[in-house]
Length: 329
Ligand SMILES: Cc1cc2nc3c(=O)[nH]c(=O)nc-3n(C[C@H](O)[C@H](O)[C@H](O)COP(=O)(O)O)c2cc1C
Image 1 (cartoon, rainbow, N blue to C red):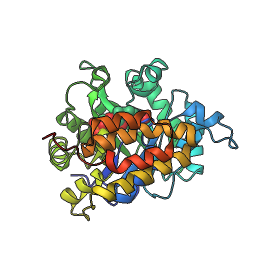
Image 2 (cartoon, protein in one colour; image 1 turned 180 degrees about the vertical axis):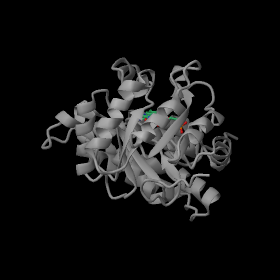
Image 3 (cartoon, helix red, strand yellow; image 1 turned 120 degrees about the horizontal axis):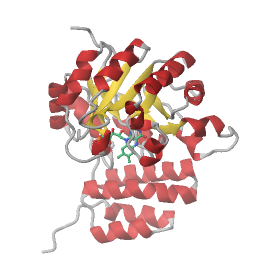
Image 4 (spheres, rainbow, N blue to C red; image 1 turned 45 degrees about the vertical axis):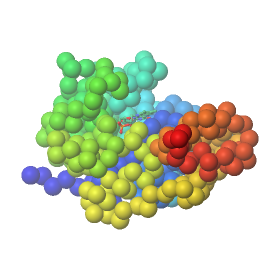
């Protein structure tokens, strides 16, 4: 069996999935603090990153910031080989130790422009992008894709084999087709043909929400690691928990009560600082909602928090909002 070695050193093979609008720098910092093997930035549209003026802190630029967590990969998306090459170079210049190409996003906005998972229907264009990006940077380039376009076109193994020859150093496979969007269950077994097609590491992704599902995904796919997305929303310690159970790394202290309120307050302040008060307030809402859901906080306070426009009042409400709702006796 070929020995699978990650392109950059990873403390554990448990990665945070790129999620547009979610895995921004503040969230990655919080997840990284609990412990993670690899953090992947939100997808950055290659056109945006290339044209963003460096003096203006546009949202797209902000998303490209690496932070102080060494194992952070920046994901780029697009369909123009030149723009993708430039975007990869910018990411590298900003300190990204690894660049990931998005071939998995099913969004119409992205697919309509023939990028994201639409590239799986056009392997020749996909390979031109890979060639351009690999040639543009010195850091390892990785690729994230789905099983294929639909049940008829499960071509991830084929693309992976070609992309490996073109220099891709690691693959992440979301165990769904593009046609499935997020419906049905991720098919971890279907990732196995990709693992068998290449000699570089493959990470299994999709519906991994705890150590049990992580172990099962690894067993069925034969993958070298797991990537967790939605499961970490409101539970930034989840990756560290999975790693502790699977790989014996140090288990995180899962915060509750005052410690949880402190953590969420700090994350909240980081978001406001990062985006500014107006945009920050809106970006923060979804995270607050997930934290409250994970903590089984009271629904009425959750609803109030979602509407609240004053940061001070949000902070003041957090301890109560994050206290598990008592059953009305
Ligand atoms: C809101 C949202 C945004 C996402 N954005 C991206 C993205 O920018 N790039 C990408 O490759 N995948 C993106 N994904 C897909 C995730 O990385 C992941 O493949 C998918 O959510 C399945 O993993 P999970 O079940 O652990 O969430 C996104 C998913 C969600 C829910």
